[in-house]
Length: 286
Image 1 (cartoon, helix red, strand yellow):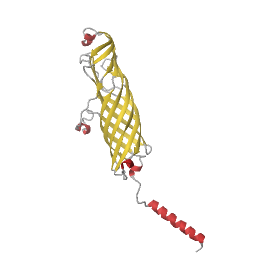
Image 2: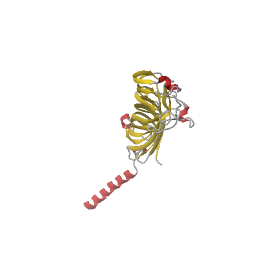
Image 3: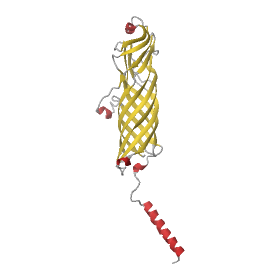
Image 4: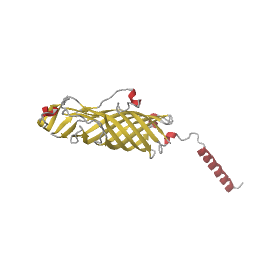
């Protein structure tokens, strides 16, 4: 056999072996190697810490501002309410649905159901005035306030977003596989990911406020907007199920809070928050 023909045959054999090896690999590509085109959904619970905030109250006969008002969340603890469809809005919860547009980036929309409760009986500095008719309950607080400390008694004010501080938001997230740093080779069984994201949206709270003894409004109302950044760890099991732990930091401005059924009665406030969240979810292709 001449040398040119021998070279052609050898080249063909090598190419055929390479092609066959590529078509029938010993280690098929993992399902978790790519995320593009996958949907995800998660549900969980949260805790919040809130910064102090200045709250302005306006209405017929009053206009005053409370400075450095402290507040806290209202946790339920570990309870079956998280999975009871009739009571899911009682605890503080998170819901998000998203879609991976690339292997790393996803877009999503969600609801952070938080709760905000002003600390009762605290003393805060107050500026402004109260001038109500003498036959109204709040008339006992009539006067001019110039940095005067006032105790937040129930007769003066109760103020909370407890059903709740509903933050409806949308944004973009990134996820990176860090499994190899933990010695994990089969990510279809367990995969460890680092997540981060940014979101923005609007606040749709049901504010429970009683200002100067007036009848509360206590109904859903679009009150403001917020922005959030987050980072966390996603642990995925058997390709489709995951546990997600995240920290979120955000800023909320609420210029239009309904406080009573009188249209002129309003409140406004700005504050930052820090959220801790644990959720469970699934990721899949349709």
